[in-house]
Length: 411
Image (cartoon, rainbow, N blue to C red):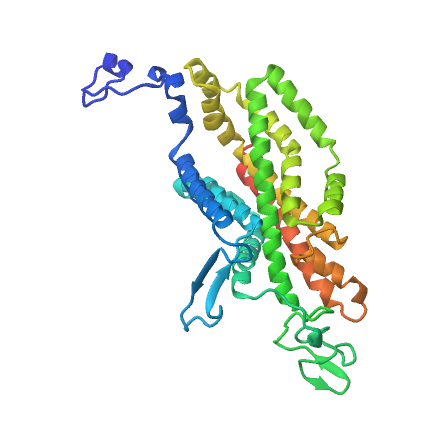
């Protein structure tokens, strides 16, 4: 049986000595303690992505698919082979998924009791639960759908086809695909949501728009919260001149005309979704940094932070292990509310013909049908509905997450 002296010196009941908190040489072990197994897992996954990325750009010839393999005859949906030309946007999205898996999914699975508690609080908001289900469907359909469904193509003989269960004057479409009764063209299952003025299927365009919105929202938000959290916690913990310099830079950045810079780049190089993500992701994190700093300023005076500093823990350890985890609820809520803002901004730019013309987004489809609202209302209406409900769902989720994650919220 261990004595009281043994306990104070760090001896366990088996006679072996264990290091106590005060015995750890933080300066000596700082490099090892800052990086957890999760961090090492992220590093390994990123290293694999970097290796494949290098292979794609150094070995794979231009206009050649990055991934290509033959398919058995039992998979006729894809054709004879599966082809995937990984773009810059795809690489960023894969990196985003890696970070989400290791820093969102894995912690939720490891802390099941806490996750169950948060879920009980979250599901009190029924609209948020419905919104979560809707967003999961949009995410899965948007990511998996374009793999199975070919990209929409120009087909003038099928222009202005009405949606299923609706009709239009037979003079509107060039050639009615559905049933024709008298002077009326009926919608058909061939195009459940109708077609555009150039014959592109609205349902396919909506599915590809889901992919664009999810990639855009998640990648841009990841850049924003990563930079904003890093700057905010470093500024709050360091204080003094470091805090002053970082916050003055944030003030300057918040007044920076990102939209005008984007217009200039569009004029010089043309619209690009990749350019939109990088530009807004690198220039829109000031608000997050301020929010995180205000939370971290309070946390740095907590007893556990002062105890770690007194025991010799270095700045990197305190920030990584104490400040960042304790501002994560604020960051998650802010991120959930930021995603719809970027989706809406891209849709607005696409509506103004300032987006990427090669990528079918919801804003682009809405703009394509604005001149045909009197005769082909469905072209703008269906993408508009999906855009509206996606923005609304993220807002409902953000409100519910704030109530569930913030212990100061009224129960």
